[in-house]
Image (cartoon, rainbow, N blue to C red; front, side, top):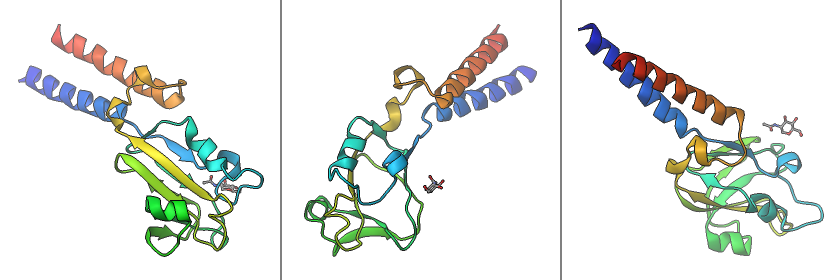
Length: 163
Ligand SMILES: *[C@@H]1O[C@H](CO)[C@@H](O)[C@H](O)[C@H]1NC(C)=O
């Protein structure tokens, strides 16, 4: 009986650990520039997104002053044309947190007149998050070491319980 309870507890710990491994990251779009019309470089947001590896479950924070900008998800066609007539959804309150819920390309623009033409547009390509394990993450972060620690702790518990 005690052993069954231990095994049940172990299963819970392992399941919680597996959930932790696929943790999501939060990106502040544009980093310190945040979400505005980029001053000199119209490709600023392309450059910002270029070397990032977006996964399902990651969160984009568009930081802007409510009333000065907004963020709308649009189609590829609308993104290319800076068209504001066919938006998928629009978030008018900043900062706006948008969770990337599926794989594939997402297109965001600001629908304020001329802002998109000025470069306030972002395209991200989202990959499946299943491979987000500590071992193949890029630079080590405190989150990934936490995950690694949790994993080691639960594996140690498993070994103790099984011996
Ligand atoms: C948004 O930008 C403002 C002004 O730069 C800053 O004070 C604030 O902390 C930022 N908020 C977030 C969620 O990044």
